[in-house]
Structure formats: C-alpha cells, structure tokens
Length: 98
Image (cartoon, rainbow, N blue to C red):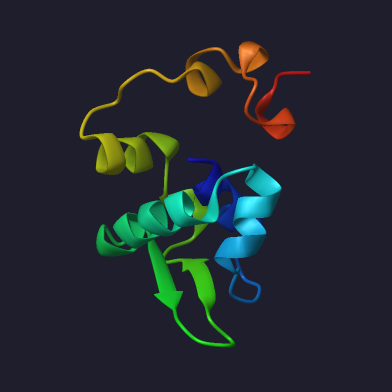
C-alpha cells in the first residue's frame, strides 16, 4: 500500500524507479518488484522497463482507494495496523496520525 501512496504522491510526473520507492519506503527491492508486478497485472499501475523505465499509476489517485489495492493484493480487506490504527503504525512516519 505504501508503494501505491508513493506513486500517488508523484502522479503526473516522470516514472518512478523501483529502487527509489524501495529506499523511501524501507522495503527490500526484490520484494517490491514482486508487488509492483502484481499491481501492474491488476491494472493499478503501468510499468516500463529500461533506462527510462519505472512505474506510474494507471489512473488518477482519486480513482484508486487503498481498499481497492488491498483487496487486489490480499483478496479481502484484511485489517492492517496502518489503516485501522494509523497512530500506532511503525512502518511509515507519513502514515502516522499527528
């Protein structure tokens, strides 16, 4: 979900490299590659390989909900601490309630 948020924050700009998302979100790049491939197959993102490659959202951020992404990846809307209790989220400072 953090990868989708990362891409949403950069919507309308250049493609975003996996390594950059992995670094910002503290995710292992190989794991993120697998998730991004799945998100691409599900139609949430468009990906392009090569030196100018990267990822972009397939639709405007306003047309995609975290619930849609979660359902696509998990099959159900399984509760996640960062969604149900953002104040307790330890994964991303950006998702914590202030």
